[in-house]
Length: 448
Image (cartoon, rainbow, N blue to C red):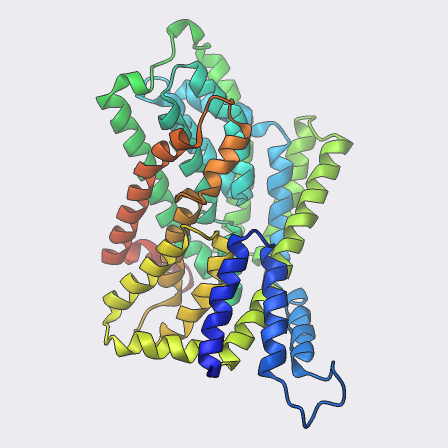
């Protein structure tokens, strides 16, 4: 076999190993080292079995990842999200928004989506948002006689907004891989994120209007006084909104780097938890442990992916795929449709981490050829990658919810509720294709 064919075999073997359940990061490292040993093997220059350049490459990649300033923001944003999650702010926020929106059809679902969007902005952790809202809002909706599939779809789709809405961990990872400014990427993601959340709410209200039995209105006797609602909104929404605005505002206005703003956010999350008297030593330990665990996963994913990608490129894999795409004689729109279609299909068996770290870099060198802005491409990918959490059979958001849902809720019930939101995501991508200013106007306005 030629080297490019071996590179493609390496890629296919990686997908097969991941589907068998092997850890992604260490599978990447093992595949990179194994095939890299073959790629860099030179019997005339090797003094002993470990005298192979792949080991030097692995060490250099590890050092590069650990010294990357952009990735410093990852543990700080994670810590902010985990602290806010344990500060009991989210449940008060959901309750207050639900009561304030009680006259809207599907008010509880709208409140759940709004809370998911706010919490996703403060956290950026998909599993944490879906799990927490699955324990908080999902039982409340079932108790209010909401349709099970309808309620499940709301939680899963709303929880995935953290992929797109800053400070998304995925956007930080993409900015490091594409070597573009995370500030511009955050600015580009703001309006598409708000657009998608708004489309979700329009769908929920429209569906509840057409079929009120899906989402019954709360009885008047269950609605607290106006003063109680105002107090809950003041003590839950405003502090969290101020924290988010201070973090994202500092980033978008250029007053702080993402890492510096993330540090402010982490301190602000601690301060809020202390003000609510909900920060126990045990909760703080949990937040620190989860932050370290997730940060280590992200760093090792980078180490493994860069090693894997370096070997894949050295063997000629990138050139083979690049030649295949160029041979189709596609225009800009054709290339975008092809790239996003492949990413969408990969979302069925794989999670966003494998897709963004392994497959997206294959397309990045082609962007200049097809005159595609990396910012615009990144936002399309961020929209598209939400499908990796919502598309069966993987649909990790469904499994997160199933893990905390009542036993009688079946996965098929959750899958049925998810499907309309997949259509909404695809519709939003079509809008972005036709109106790229949705993503590109704000970064141009802020940064020129």
